[in-house]
Image (cartoon, rainbow, N blue to C red; front, side, top):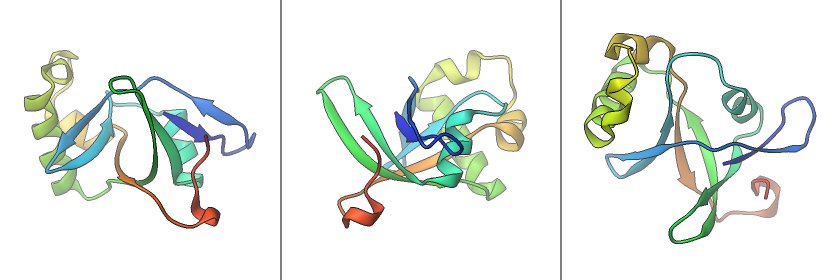
Length: 116
């Protein structure tokens, strides 16, 4: 995923995992701070780079902050991608401290266009 650096203004590309929960693209990870999340808080536009098929999907990110929604997403993510459950954290840890964003494909105006 490529984000726009909150302080530098430079494009930052990181490798991330995503899952699809309730038909929505969700990026989450083990508990802790992430630069990509801080960047998305400042600039919601991003590009999700897919490997197969190769595609660069412009997205808008929305941080998930509601505890009940975070719990539902974490529980579903653990079912969809068992790797999450093997990381040594409880669902409570994920709900309280994991980065978690919903990505929505964006095809809007130039002003909101995410970075490439």
